[in-house]
Image (cartoon, rainbow, N blue to C red):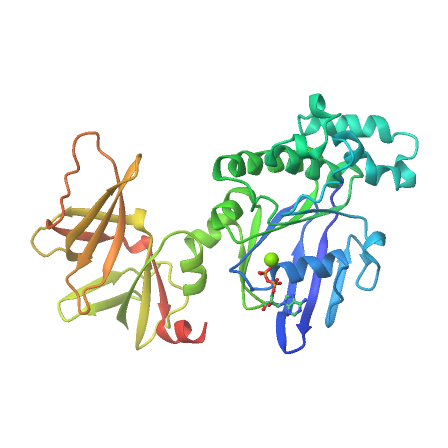
Length: 372
Ligand code: ADP
Ligand code: MG
C-alpha cells in the first residue's frame, strides 16, 4: 500500500473578508477514500488548495504521514492531483504525459518507461499510448490524468470534481474505475464533489461541508441513516420534512403531535438523538421517501397520516407518489413505492394513509433548524 494518512488540524482560510474554511480538523486514514461534499462556495476547493500547497492556510497545520508540510512548496509535498480540467500536456502523447512526472523523480530515473507502461495497463489505455490528448474522449483523457497522478506512487491523491465535465454514463463508469485503481494500489484519496450520489458510492467516509465548516463526517450509511442536522438530512439523499411538537412520554418514548388529531408515537429506542427527552418542544421530523408506506385509507390506526395522492410518477424500478397530507398547511410528501407490473394501484385524487415506521424517522429540535 502506498497511501499515507492526512491530518488537517484547526485549518483556517480567510480571503480578505471571506472565511472560506473555518477551523477544520479532519483525518483521512492511510488508504482511505474520503470525500468532501458540499454546495458551491462551501470551501471544498480551498481545502484542497491548502493541502496541495497552492494556498497558505491563515492558521492551522497539515500533516502527511508523520511529516508536517504546512509551509512546504507544492513540489515538495509529493501529492498526486487530478482536477476537473484534465490539464494534460496537449503536445505530448498519452505515454509521454504519464511519464512526465516520473522523469522528474529520482526514484523512477531508471524505470520510468516500464512504469509508464504499467500505468497504461492499469487504466486500460495501452493501445492509446501514442495518441495525443485531443484524439481521446473526455473519459479517456481523465483516465490519463488519473494514471499520471498515480504513476509516481504519491502517498496522497487530491481530486477536485474530476468528473464534473463528463456526461452521466461516463461519469458513473469513471467512478468505478477510479475506485478500482485506488483500491488496487491502496492510495489515500481526498476527493471533492458537489454530487452526493458520487460521494456516497465512492467513499469510505464523507465530510459534509457548509459555509467553511464540517457539519458531519461519517460513512455513507451513517450519513444517510443518522444525519445529525436538517442540513445533512436534506443534502444527503431525498428527504421529507414535517413540523410538529414532541412530548416526552413516561416510558421514555416520545409522542410527536403533527396536529390536534394526528400524533406519531415513538418508542424509547427510536433514532432521534437531537431532541431533549424531557418536556415538550417544537420539532422537525425527517422521513425518507422509500421508508414511507402508502396504503388505502383505513379507520384510524397509529402512526398513519391521512392524505390524497396528487401525482404518481413512473421511475422504472419504482414509483414516486406525491401525497398531499391532511395537516395544517397541507404539506406534500414524496413516497417511493415499488413498481408493480400491473397498473399503479394509486391514482391521483385517491385517499390514502402514509404509514410512518418509527425507525424510519429522524427528529430534530426546531431550534437546531434555525441555528444550522
Ligand atoms: P467550493 O470549492 O466549495 O465551491 P471554494 O473553496 O472555491 O468553495 O470557495 C469558498 C469561499 O471562498 C467562496 O465564498 C469563494 O468565493 C471564496 N474564495 C475562494 N477562492 C478565493 C480567492 N482566491 N479570493 C477570494 N475569495 C475566494
Ligand atoms: Mg470548488
